[in-house]
Amino acid sequence: GLARRSVLAAASDIAAMGGKPHGFLLSMGLPPETLVSDLESFVESISHLCQETGMVPYGGDTAKSQTLFVDVTVIGEADPENLLRQTGAEPGDTLWVTGTLGAARAEWMSYEGADSQLPGRLNRRFWSPPIRWTCLPDLRHALDIRSATDLSDGLALDIRKILRAKSLGVSLQLNDLPIDKTAVEFCARKDLDMLDFAFLGGEDFELLVVEKGSHHPSEPFTADGVPVTKIGVLTDKVGEIERRDGDRIRRDPGTPFEHFPPKEP
Image 1 (cartoon, rainbow, N blue to C red):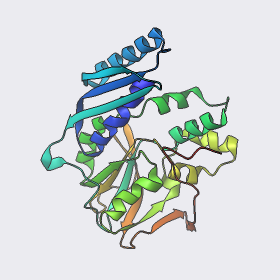
Image 2 (image 1 turned 135 degrees about the vertical axis):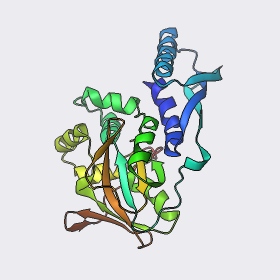
Image 3 (image 1 turned 45 degrees about the horizontal axis):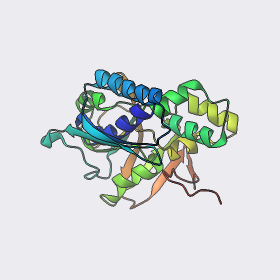
């Protein structure tokens, strides 16, 4: 799980820029008590991932360390004419998102709460971020893509990267968010609002894509078999994130995702 997650999380940035990852450098710090069997499992997982994606391990290093760490640098390539950035969006452009949201958030919240009822398939989503660079040809064919980013910090934070690049606002339709069914189950069990839950997100690693204007039908479509859903429209209301729940506008959704939250005293 750790091997796959460390490489695919890094590769997501290349997909977000319209590129394809070719290989990676991987370095590890290993405590003296590390089991050889665990290291062999890590290497085997890396090997399977390379066979699946065509990526190549270019090299790396191992070192003795008091704490375990994994450091990954993914190298890829994008056509300069098709390079995607977070800049360039305009009012009236349409927001689309690949895949589903919320599953990874459900898992790390379950880890924090030692939730023994966590569905096993959530584990697969957290430890295996989605591969989305294979969607790009179909996405480009269906949409005139103006800009894009990946959802590593959650929709609530990552959407601001698109907005601040051009002093924009956005009107989101929360009812249209493609919420992962396991996240829906988790929210029902914990009595959480699933719309706010998916909006806050974290570690989804889906693609947030800006279509130039609004020319594609609003119905979801698939790109390389992955669902792509329209979730909102950009506006000229600088910095405003309007969260619509049908005809109602929602207010503060709660605390956004933090990669390194402060520890409880």
